[in-house]
Every structure is written in C-alpha cells, then in structure tokens.
Length: 410
Image 1: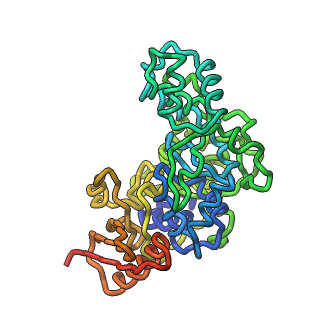
Image 2: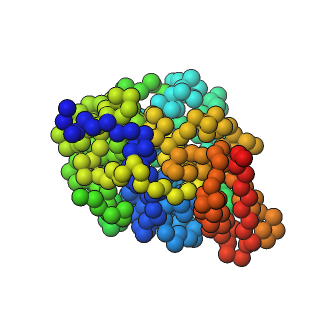
C-alpha cells in the first residue's frame, strides 16, 4: 500500500480541520482574508456569526467585521445548502451561478406545487422591477407580486424570486449593534462592478459555465506553510466547480466526496474529484472511506494541543461534513435541541464538542454560562474562564463586568 492511502484517524482529521478553520491558533488574517479562505461563513442569524470571526482571528473587533457589510466588500446571500452565508463580494458573484441548482432544488421542495404553471421569466422580470425601486423583505416582495398573480401564494412568489434572482440581504440587517428587517436587493443593484483587488485568489468567474455542477434539468422542476498562508488558493484557470472543490479542501479537508456534497448542496461531485485526483493526495478514514486532500496542506500531529474554543450556533465547522465525528461527539448531538427557538452553541475542548454555552446581559454585567459534558481539570477551568472573559468583552464591550459561570460533572 502506498503512502497516499495512509489511514487518518479521528484525531488526525480533527486537527487538520481545526487548523484550516483557523481554530488551532488565532490567525493574523484580516476579516476579509479569513472570509475568503473559509469560503464564507453561515450567517442566517443577524449577529451570532460575529463570534465565528472572534474565535478565529487575533485582535478581532466587531466593528471591523461590520464594515465588510457597510462597505459592500461582503454580503449575506443564499448559497451553500441554500442557506444564508456571509461571503466576499467577489464570491457572491462567482458562486451564486454555480449553486443555482441547489437553490432550485430547495424551492421545488418547499413551493414547487404553488408555482406550477408560472412563467419563470415573467416572475424574474417582475421581481427585479419591484426590487429596483426599494429594498423589500420576502413577505413584502410576495405581497407586491400578488397584485399581478392574485391566485398565487405570496410566500411562494417571494421565495421564487429569491431563488431565480440573486438577492442579498442589505444593511442595517447584520450590522453589529444595529437591527433592521431582512430586506433584499439584487446582487447587481447592490454591488455593481466588483473591484479587481477584492477578487480572491482562484475565485471562479461568473462568466464561466458551471462544468460538473448539477444542471437545472437534473434538479426537480419547480513543507508546512504558516496558519496565515493562503491555504487552498488555486489557479484561476480551474473550472468553477473544480475551484470550489479545491477551496473546500483548503478550508475543511481532508474530505470524502459526500463531505463536499453535504457542504455545498451540489451532487455528482465524484466525477469532479476523479478528474482532480492526479492533483490530490488520498487517504482512508477509519471506516475505509476514501479521503481527498491538497497535497501540500497542513495535517498536524494528532497530539497537537487544541485550546478551548466557543463556536456560534451555525458554525460551518459543525455543518460541513457528512461524517461529523471528526468534531461532533454523540453527547453533543443528543443535546443539540433548540431551546426557545435557538440552537445550542458548542464549546470545543481538546478539539471536540464537549459542552454548550449561553450569554446574558444584566445591566452592566455580562454573564457567560458554560455547561461542560466532561469533567474539567483546574487547567481546563482556568483556560475556559480566560477565553470566556474575552468572549464577553467582545460581545458586550470593554465597559461590561464579565462573569463566567462553569458547570461540569463532579
């Protein structure tokens, strides 16, 4: 057996993924550079994803992250898995056409019957016309379109435009310290021409056809570089889907075909990875599944220390593999039940999910409550308290009085 078919155990996969997710040690990258490297961050909530930057970047300030939205260098848009992601402006334009089949499939599942018989072209033209006038929520958009199609479900009409027209949620929605409705504009209206310097290395061109992606006909109708090196950057001559897969491996690998498909929502990626095979390293996981990886990517020693990390509710680290056992424990999975409409936020100890956390602000006091699933040593408790204190100062400001409360099995 050749070295390329080495078996990578759970801890080896864990440490490799944590490194690429900038979670083994905080990175000096800018928020924009980190966003490019990570191929976006899931961001369907208004603000919880700011923690994803804080837990990965050194000296991160929420105001600096918010400026990505207000300066239009990044947008919140439906992409991978048809969920809202924060991505760079360049990636919004490049990835949205490639992931159109994913959104088409999602629309078919939730509103296919309500849209039967409608002209897609007519809905697109009408939707663009309404949104050119002012930003609208999907509810407002559907109500406006119902004036033309009074016998149609307005919610389905709004979802149809969100699927068939690239839309972004515009500020103040998502801006730190501010609130606003989930109002939408078209990508073209909001971004205009994207500056060349904002294009990520290896970003795909929206002018290229998504070779290897699922076509709409296939969807139901209706040496070790430093942590700050551009891991996963790939040549711009790659086809869009090749580029997307290579960037995924740079941020989440090593990974199986199913892993890439779960993260992106695309199918038929086995043929893409087969085409890329000569350029990749291959391994096996402990179950025998084949793993693909960038040949020069960092795969740290499995015993590399992993500091405690607080993850936000929809952190892509927890959502981007078919087999999530490289990070997610059975106990966390059994406790991942929404409370008051909110998913639990994960605590990582030694690289794996080992607890959950919540925050509350009472006057000038900010409280972090940590529930550990495992017994904690004095060293663990001290590290958690220090990390938790910094998290509270990030969330509530330097003027708050932080208090970290930790509970753990005796």
